[in-house]
Amino acid sequence: MRDACPYNEIKKRAKMMKELSSEVGLNYRKKFEGETFNSVLEKKKGNGYTALTDNYLKIEVNADEKPELMSWENDKTWDTDLSGKLRLVKLLNVGKNRNRGIMVN
Figure 1 (cartoon, one colour):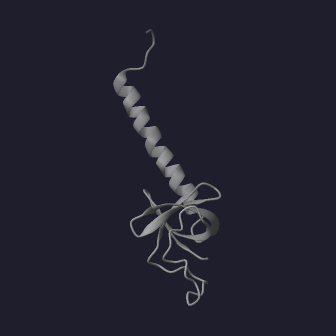
Figure 2 (cartoon, rainbow, N blue to C red):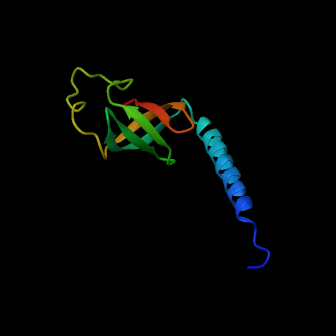
Figure 3 (tube, rainbow, N blue to C red):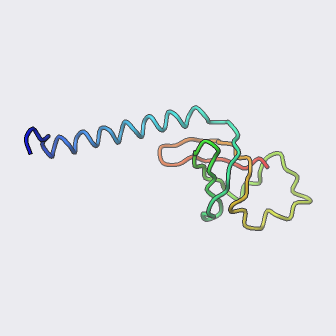
């Protein structure tokens, strides 16, 4: 193939693009720290869930942390599987590899 880019240059450019993509994604997610989203709780992961927000952010939610703004005295659903349920999730912390949050209802 004529005028093909050398393999080492392709790898170098791909690495730069991957790093840039990660940085842009992190900056985008940081804009939403402290905000609350409608979210679907996906698969149970250890002691928590992965929540998918209405703008497609994935947030890890620890099931051991009781949601804010909720009365637990009369709620019997906390010990059941919440996968597939719609909940409000507050994004507390954005990281390079994961986002952490808490359910607020």
